[in-house]
Image (cartoon, rainbow, N blue to C red; front, side):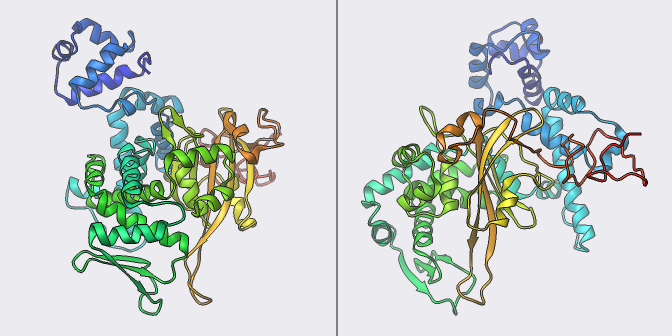
Length: 475
C-alpha cells in the first residue's frame, strides 16, 4: 500500500479539501514542497513514515486510504453504461483515470446519479418527487441501505468493540451453549429491568419483536422458532448493553441521514447478536475443524443458515482470520438485499447480478446447497455455494418469503471448504464464465445476455439470429 503510485492523487485531493498549499502540507509532513509535488503526481512513492505522519496530521482512515478504488471504478463504469451517456463515448480507461486522479469528483458523480435515479423512479411511479428543496434533499436520495452496506464494507465487516462487548456479556451473564435463552432472559431482567412477554399471533401477526422502553417490556411473537428467539434476545441485549459502542460506531459522517444511522444500529445489533451466539474463538475453531460445513455449524451453534453465513463474513481479526468470504442475498426477482465482499468480488449497485451465478439457480432446488466455480472477465476465479432460505409465516394462510444466499471465496481458499472436495478449482476448464452485471460484461456470446456489451455498437441484422440478440454476426 505505501508504495502505490495511485496514492498521489489522494494526497492532492486531501490537501485541497484541507485548503492547504503544497508548502503548508509539506511542513506538516516534515518534507519538502518539491518532494510533495512529486508524490502528488505519482513520481515518488508515499513511504511508510510519510503515510504514518499523514495519518497523524490529518483526518484519514489508513484502512481505507490505500484502497485501489476498484469497487468505485466498477460502480462508475456501471453508471456510465446507462443509455443516458451513450453519446459520450467514455471508455474504461477514462473511468479509471477519474477514480484515481479525482476520487472526490467520482463520489460526486455517484451521488448525483443516485439522486437522478431516485427522482426518475419516483416520476415513473407517479409519486411525489422528494428532495427538491436544496442540497440537503439530494443527500436524502442516497439509499440508507447503500450507505450501511458501504459502511460495513469499509470496516471489513469486523467490529472489535462489539466482539469484546459480546464476550463480556457471555461472561457476566454466564451464557453457555446449553442455557442461552434462560441466561439471556435472566440478564435482561436483572441488569436491565426488562421482562419478556409473549404475544399470540392473532394480536400481532406482523411484528416479531417490540421493545417498550417506558414499561421495560420486551414483546416477542409466539411465531418465533427457538433459534430466532435466541437471536432476538441477543439483539435486544446489544441495543441495551452495548448502547455506547453502537453510538460511537454510528457516528460516521458517511452515514448521512438519520435513517441510515438507525439502519446501521440495527445491523450492528445483529452483529452483536451473532457474536453472542457464535463466540469468535470457538466459532472460528469449529469452522476450520468442520471445514466450513454450513449445516454442521448450524447444528453446533443452533443458529440459522443465514446467520452462519453472516458470522463467517465477520472472521477478520488480525492473526485469527477465517476464509475471506463474500456474501449476497437475492430474491426470486433478482433484487439484491444484502451484499458484502470479503473475497474481492465486485457487486453491481444499480442493476441485478449476473444470471449465471449459482445464487439464482438455487431457487430451482429449494433447500439444497449448490456449488459453482466461476471465472470473471479478468480471469479471477471464485468458488461459491448457494442455498435458499425461507422465513416468515405462522400457518397455512401466512405468507412466506424466500431468498437465496450465496457465499463464496477466491479459489485459492476453496480446499479449506468441504464443498470443494473432488472439484478441480485450479483450472478454468470447468469454471462458469460470469460477470458483475450484463451492463458491464464484455462477453458477447453469453446466451443469457440481456443488454449489449458496453463497448459494442448495437447492430441488428433482421436476417440473422444468434444465441442472443446482441451478439456480433459475421458475413
